[in-house]
Length: 264
Ligand code: DC
Image (cartoon, rainbow, N blue to C red):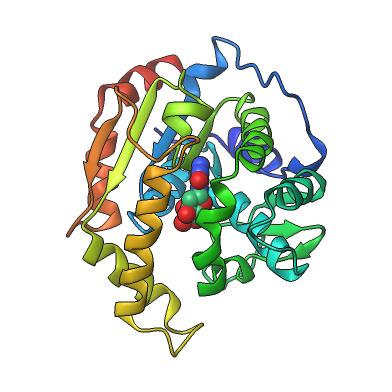
């Protein structure tokens, strides 16, 4: 399914997302555009972002990792010294911050995209263990979710997009024709996160990461608003012991991709 030069350029232009400025609470997807929306959910470090990014590259679709939006808001809360238990203040802050997600544009430090928070590059600052430990609480607040879900729907209504998160198939885009739910064993997920983080935070141990992951899974899966769970029609993909390439190959055999190829 080779993408033309023109469509690649269109995609890159489309990736320049100034999401902080867009607020359309309706966020309606028309029936044509919805055909090219892929929803991917799953727990932390299940491989969903890596797979989502590879799939988006393969299809020349936009890639939207919604977790980075919850992380950026959490970072803003921590940086501004806002009490994380003060739900109203956290929601106010969410509504006021400007969030941009841009392509990596030549940055060769392993980033999948660049995240700007009020104009500052926070791509790696949102990946610290401090943000990890607080993001589940921030993302459990209803007002935070409402604001970020509006922004996410707004982006997705352009179509040709792979959207990754926890509630994409169940709440954000339940109309998506392909919903994937990516899982892996908790131990493998903790190991992947430890490998990813050990250069940036040398003192962090595998056991600490494992304990935090179990705690976050519990909060994300049991929260009142939009708990993490597969949509009824989601395809469950277990990535334990598989390489990203093997997983992508497995996903591309799904019927959806035959239909998509014919309609492009
Ligand atoms: O995928 P991640 O680890 O970067 O996500 C960070 C947190 O954001 C995660 O603990 C739960 C929350 N999140 C969410 O509640 N809903 C989403 N659609 C995406 C992430």
